[in-house]
Image 1 (cartoon, rainbow, N blue to C red):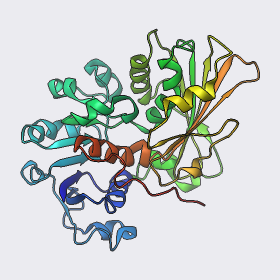
Image 2 (cartoon, rainbow, N blue to C red; image 1 turned 90 degrees about the vertical axis):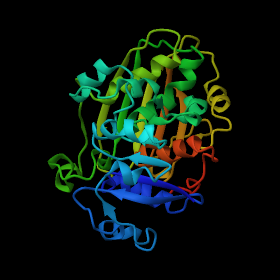
Image 3 (cartoon, one colour; image 1 turned 180 degrees about the horizontal axis):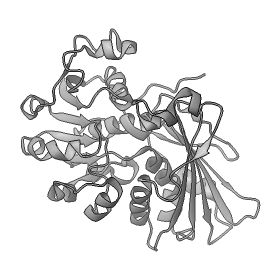
Image 4 (spheres, rainbow, N blue to C red; image 1 turned 120 degrees about the vertical axis):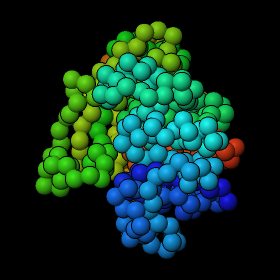
Length: 344
């Protein structure tokens, strides 16, 4: 079995990594770290994993002990991974970072949005952005992968076929996105308390959201022309899920959008292009690593409307991280991720 570690394993993404890796046929979690919960068994912290994590116990993060792993996931606050990554990579450990430390290639942009200097720009320059549908080959050769954020995953996969083919006005893109409260993490915050988030919906981050520079960085790589994006995130009264409704002005209204999307994603294990006229629901991907996409034309016949749903904790975080790890280890990228969605 391939030994892996999880640094910062007490949150929702850490729990999802443990849940999904429990059914992975070739990977075993041997190190699980948390300074606060050191000495506590994983299944005491996550009772739903009782019987799946054995005697795995939280320990203090330490480079020497983590070096026994072939790969390490960082499910930590921003800044933690870049502090430990250089020494781990130097010791031959592969890294998948679920924070933002290795997503933005521009260090000035990173400081602007995350309020800190990047401590290892040389390693950042080497890091690969972990969107398999775009960077599969580079991911398979990488020592460190910056796992995409949840909103950026849905928006980039939704716009990808249109931008690659040069079929839309890339300077007037709109992404209207909704997320469940688990996207805010497991820490107690007033805005994500049940009494605050239930029975309501609200936009946030309109003047500027940290995922905007990550999304635009990815979209620019897909397009031969300048890209400009209006990104409007919303908090919805559900636990899991992201629904992104994307709008783009078509250069040629006669284009067959259904054929375009089916052709681009044919053979992709985790992108499902829905039949023409369908409207995907967030619950249709709950608990799975699948992204479902439906593409329409607005009544004016000139606007592409793309509907994208993912589970923010799986394809938007931990599932995609495992997909990336599989690629980095030369494994079938679907290993440990084949379970169907949960419903209801």
